[in-house]
Image 1 (cartoon, rainbow over the protein chains, first blue to last red):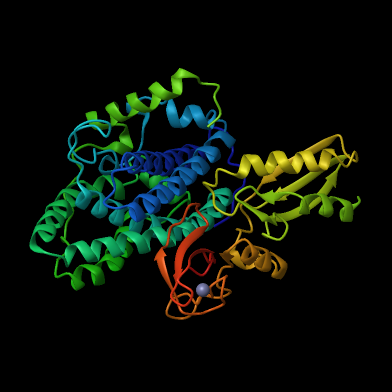
Image 2 (cartoon, chains in turn purple, yellow; image 1 turned 30 degrees about the vertical axis):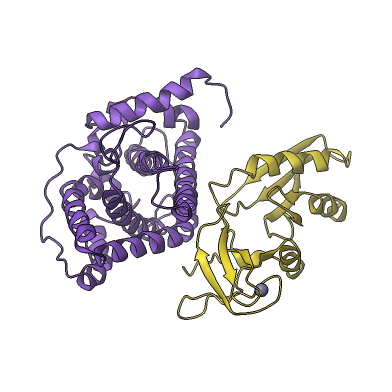
Length: 271
Length: 160
Ligand SMILES: [Zn+2]
């Protein structure tokens, strides 16, 4: 397919591109935020250092995707990340779920198993997604994908190690992990779909079809699941809410309230 | 264009987190060009979320201004080609060591394991403690010979 550097105004191509960029940016942004809520609370000090570093990388990736949107005239990066309302957000619902009940400043029961499973599933998906975006018809996006792909190599290694270790640890750990896997499966469809403009996104050559990515993603998960004697469901449960259409849970609303509270204290501050 | 003077000035811009190595030896400088009296410098960020990028950009500007050669200077971060750890020069690798940081393993061995020599004693008898270190581009290792913890630059390649 022909490579494009500047999409024509008011074209189907441009609409599809903008839609996909919002999904990419919002996915990384909200999960980086959820990750950063663990700061100081991770199971041990080494993990605290590692997780912070991963969150910083992910926030950097979100910033790059927002930058591509800014370049298309969608608005300024800080506004795009901080001031858009809940119903304007396009992230998959899986990524907005709280880490557990409670608040990170007060009493809380954050669930490490859930965090490990969600991050592992997401990072593996992100890898498959970036592999496909490398040949995107939109050249600036393909360039960013090459860069992101290299950085998440270490993220994936990290989460896969945690996943295998906790799955193969004692029965308490195994039980928590199985519960977490179930919860993540219930939401995973929200991640793998491109939303109402999905067909246009694929037709524009921006990324390959959803089922192709799903297949590849399952292909990567299979040996890991086999190693811990778990099976991958044949069919995924349809997502409860379609984040890609701007339908979200109150978890996202609350997270955005916290985020924008800080942002609106001084919108001219440089971050 | 006086490329030699510009390069000399860029050599004075150090990585804010490792002040023994310049951005030139880190392999961050991709192009230096002049367009209509405007100097354009294109830099490659090591990691995209690196918080030091703004500082680097400011410092580059300061150094170029001090040359009194250009009124208009444009510093741009670009992503193609992507920065990879083999862009670090031989001199840069030595400078990292003098800072107590092992340079990135030149090539990933087939198993994906790293062979990293201790920057203090040169021993190969080292182990990775944490893939993630104090900054995005570094990992924490331990030398089993001289029993020192140390950091190493992560290998980053398009093959990963
Ligand atoms: Zn040593």
